[in-house]
Length: 118
Image (cartoon, rainbow, N blue to C red; front, side, top):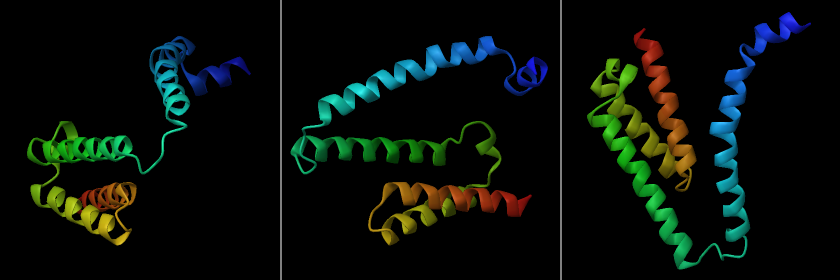
């Protein structure tokens, strides 16, 4: 049984380091955000500003990926990257301005285009 579990999980030390260094610090900030943000009105100026900043950061990351694609994304043709952004924007508008829907539509277009190209 131990061999099967070891083969499935791999080195348990790496998983422990991942948990301690990656998951726990992230979850602390999420819980503090829930605790502090629980009483804030969703229509308040603070949350409108936070949403605007988050959208601007996402737009900046998308622009950087389009202009200077990192890693394996550099092998994707320019036209496919721009088409995926256009599809994502159309999905954003079609879903009544849901950023999540726009990102998912763009990702699907990118993966489908890359699969189609081979």
